[in-house]
Amino acid sequence: MRRDNLTWESEFVLLGLSSDRRTQVGFFVLFGAAYLLTLLGNGLIILLIGLDARLHLPMYFFLCNLSVVDICYTSSGVPQMLVHFLLEKKTISFIRCGAQLFFSLALGGTEFLLLAAMAYDRYVAVCDPLRYVAVMSPRCCVGLATVSWLIGLVNSVVETVVTMRLPTCGHHVLNHVACETLALVRLACVDITLNQVFIVASSVVVLLLPCCLVSLSYAYIVAAILRIHSTGGRRKAFGTCASHLTVVSMSYGMALVTYMQPHSTASAQQDKVVVLFYAVVTPMLNPLIYSLRNQEMKAALSRVLMRSSESKL
Image (cartoon, rainbow, N blue to C red; front, side):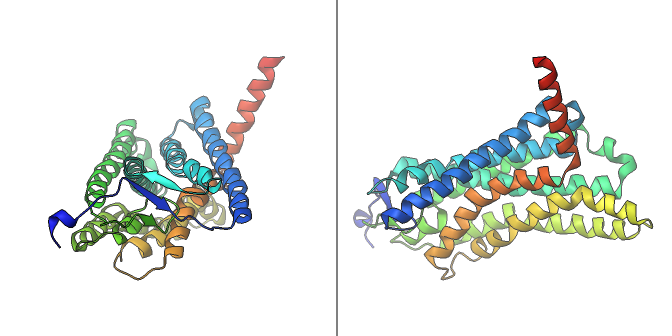
């Protein structure tokens, strides 16, 4: 194809989830409520960790980072989605589309890497408890979090640039709810082999390797728990990992299936489900999982509420 026939669009049209007006209003209410719960739940976790000195521990440091990521990630796409539910024509400019893609990739990658860092923290806590304070020092925790954020950002810069440079030759209708890598690549009117290679390489760095590290950490954790003779000791050791293991189980599987094989003929509806799961469902459920299964978080909430009520007297 001649270079002068290659064109880039100034804006894209998003088809969204449905063209039925009543259905769109229902989606607006549903996803709007989920977005508010996400902001409130993750905001409460950040507030509790900041206010309660007993939660100034490595596990809660990473949890605070995870909550920040969840708030930013869901805010990068859900508000626009909510607006589009109320509009007849759902358009997004090229620049806004690129920005949305960048933030979703950066924050999504950072979350997967943070989950791996949290798995390492749980490994040290269960398998090497006597050296836990020395190993998981503040310097180590900040280092792990910084590396997670940096890798997420660098990976996003590369993948966003490679994706947004693809010419579409007049194709500007995205059968999606947001500007997402696979949906944008499908619009391209040039060879996308290089993009597929980048997608797989990116998935290896931010998905497959962290998933392998998490699996290895929990293999050691399970082996260590099985060596504990008392039932109470086993229950306590498993309880320190249960919340994180629940979040990990939700997070990695669907993304690996989707992004490790970008050449597959996965339906547009399946792609939409994946994006909605990570943009709406996971950020909303994470605070519930960590707070409902974590006695220290419940105790911290009680202490904060008690101090608040005493200060009003």
